[in-house]
Image (cartoon, rainbow, N blue to C red; front, side):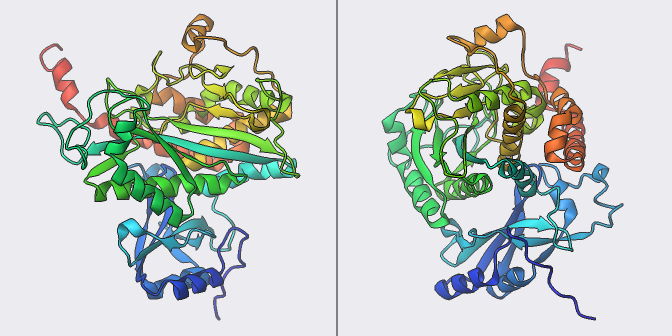
Length: 467
């Protein structure tokens, strides 16, 4: 009896793509194959050249339990996918268009992204890419195409800590100076890290990631770069993940680290992950377009759904204990389900711009969040709002933090209540799938228990003598 390869899924790259790449790149001898776990951490293997084609012809067997490991890569036995499942393999298949050189890893190294399938070829419902695709399919059924763009803030930090063990900005290779001031939108601050930025842009061109302009953000060594809008939500999330991986690798080549941790310093700005969203019809027309600065009725309904369900989404948008340190008033990190026009103090902002560019900027997620899941919950809420024509209420004018305080409506303020709300969300269970929600909640509750077991220096500072 022979075993034949499963029938190709539309989202699986064909062998010809691999064949053409190998012919065009005889210098590449090693390949990183990687997929994304629930926590958003890329995991995989490094293979030799002769091992690549079989992945395109059939796939690569990998344990399904790696989809539900915690942030540190440890098994989460509570999911039932370790011992009870026999730690069974699933089949990882290559994602079209992601086989590229990986210049920061060396001239002889390439990479390709994988997505997880069951052995019969059906998509694995715990793979974040397939969770997002499930939501995108709801839009496709209605003749709508989300147009999205990711905007990530992050810090460059020195590889060496201070004498006290704290993080510190890296010294510039050009000036030898370590940045100290905020200098938001500062041009000298960008020039100081220009070797890093130049390599990052050049590399992203090789990777096919549409990386655009950079700004110096609201803290020393904090930067923000944007990705171009595209009418392919799945590829937009792929771009964000590939970009983060490249930025981290390139930073190391320049003697520092790129950290997407939500709040590396208690007294400095946190790092957000802003998602820009609009919706096209079959003709490619923006259905959010309007002379009205608040946008079309469809845009308002999408915002209505996002606003109504924002609390339910927080476990995805702020997935870690550290994530919740971002959210405080007058910090440019939202603290309540609010919306407004040309207003950065609200959660859901309709930016200024020409009528045909009208869209919403979702400003709540942290840079530490999984791009696939962030986009999945944002779009799920938008689709729910459009379907049920949910009114977002009046737009906030002026200080969104004051408006949030007056309304006495806030988002979950801690990791535990956020996971509980997500677990109880009937709408998100409908869009993402019960099994995914159950497994995500199981992973996060396991992480919570492990995180809280650790006795830290702060425990000693607060309680050793005072208790």
